[in-house]
Length: 370
Image (cartoon, rainbow, N blue to C red):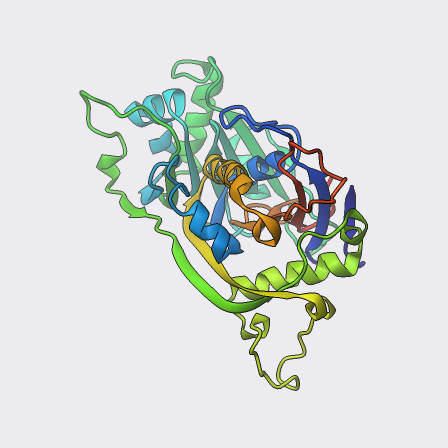
């Protein structure tokens, strides 16, 4: 079920999807066309991933959490577009490897470039686009007349025709050398590229500033937890969906109002939740990764959590995974999502006995989802 929790304003809008995960998820070949996996993969550039789960569940998952994933690293590097399209960097990282890159720039105002799954995306103002001589499409402005006309050019650099000497590729190289020639700051992440044995890393000559992403772990003691193992009829309640999402954000921000012993003056903070009347009290753990995170890693983390969830029992068998995106589009951009894996109930007939359980997915978009 898809339900829009939105008003008539042009601001960001939330959409909620409820569903049941399959009985078995193949880590290497998950169902790519169904949610929540399609949502995870559609968000190419993520700056923050936040995981919230009960401490009891965290202690069970801790020995295995992240053991199947390599240490996350990304780099900051200054390069021009022509640097990306020439020499060993192009052959090693784009033709044979799998990287993602995002340039500096404000979407809707400045030129912004990105590279994901071999597709180079150029978001250009009209005056710059006309000088490049490349073929692109007009972007939507969402009815906002103050926005200047912009065009997007998307080029699949992995096509066999994308090689030096071909007319189409040489046109792209010319545009990068003569029009889009500014050196920019890029975020660079090597998702899966074979390490060169005999030759130096093609990225090394650009002197990248490499950073590792270490998880920040915080704990909220004696937190009031609303019911996250509700019957299906309760999940259809808009008020419940809004309250649970708001509560998850308070936990992520370490807000004191979620604690059982909270004594904040209601005059200073009016936050309250009627579901607290039947809430349980337990310790919560929040794990946060901040940097330049690829969707493949987030998908691997989610599948690993779903697999480990079989060891969670009772009301402690839930977790919430949130991912927040870098802004790359003014309209139709996905700003972030939250996946809540609900705790299983013994009398829950909405799930198949061998399924991984029910989930609720919140998506934030700058406009209506198409």
